[in-house]
Amino acid sequence: MTSSAIPEQPLGFARGAPMRNRLALAPLTNLQSEEDGTLSDNEFAWLAKRAIGGFAMVMTCAATVHPLGKGFPRQLGIHADRHILRLERLASALRSAGALSAIQLQHSGARAPYHLIAEQPVGAVDDPERGVRGLSTAEVEQAVEDFVQAGIRAEKAGFDGVEVHGAHGYLPCQFLDVTRNSRTDRYGGSAEGRARMLIEMVTGLRARTRPDFQIGVRLSPERYGVDLGEMRGLTERLMRSGLVEYVDISCWDTFKIPEDPTYKGRALMDWFTDLDRHTTRLGVAGKLTTAGNVLECLRRGADFVLVGRGAILHHDFPRRIAEDTNFRSVDLPVSRFHLAREGLGKEFIDYLATWKGFVAEGQDQG
Ligand SMILES: Cc1cc2nc3c(=O)[nH]c(=O)nc-3n(C[C@H](O)[C@H](O)[C@H](O)COP(=O)(O)O)c2cc1C
Image 1 (tube, helix red, strand yellow):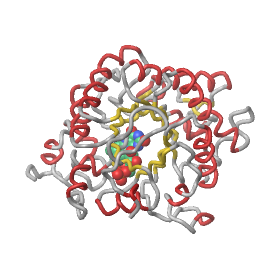
Image 2 (cartoon, helix red, strand yellow):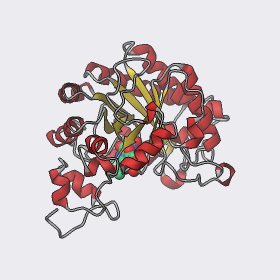
Image 3 (cartoon, helix red, strand yellow):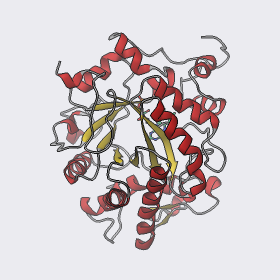
């Protein structure tokens, strides 16, 4: 085992403070915010408990950078200055518990449900079937500015950094979509054009936030219309740019063989570990629920891992894997009682009950 394959080892970044170990809380939408996107006490409690549980970086769920980007009811918002005050309290609690803090910046674009935004959703291109209007060039420039402004708010709130959500089919990913982005302006037409929006976002964030502000980008390696080779190229470019501290590859299943037969020769994460990282760190996420697969991921070259479901199930997942190399998250489904004891509020538990096989209904113990 190389020294970097030890989960408890700290990880430095090109800018800002280091992670105290190799485990980050993955961004997890939890529907616990106030109606206007303000951080609630339940959301504060859920996140603070993960910092106390040993996560080295605690990232919020996807937070909307613009009201039109709202994808979920009771979604966290960072599109207005009124959101800053409660976020300040969170940043300070996470720091006191020894964790780095990050806000994930998100815009649902074409995936924003009409009933939540009460306006026509906007996306990279017109989509009459889904009632989506393609953004004009000037509106894309404004959307870039919305992400930058949200990052400036995160900085004002005292966060260590932000992650731009460029994955999962949301707005920046809609621009990366090879199958759908048919734009003829500079935000389409080629791999370079498709990535332009994202590159402009991180360039703007870098230029207009303090020098030690940590900027990350989340990308999907496959699905959502993206091409794995193109995402590998974009990751390489981001790593070379010096604009970001980390790239987070959201695999959903880290060791899986890609769906596209062109890339079936290696598992998803392995398409990214051999890139020249310069000073940029590589994070990966997807089905890392045991000490064994966290270790395997680090051994195969990830600098850090982002844990979702394991962190929902165990607020102290990092501590548990440090103590027991055979640690495995409890089997699903789990009871509401278990989730409440792990610091989840009712809205979050109700949301998880909509994920197949997560919550065992009718049980109140365990
Ligand atoms: C309930 C739930 C909410 C999620 N919300 C987000 C989100 O807000 N932003 C995001 O980028 N990914 C989101 N994800 C994906 C996770 O960050 C993570 O990448 C994924 O769950 C795979 O990791 P895991 O197998 O450890 O859960 C969500 C996943 C779950 C299960």
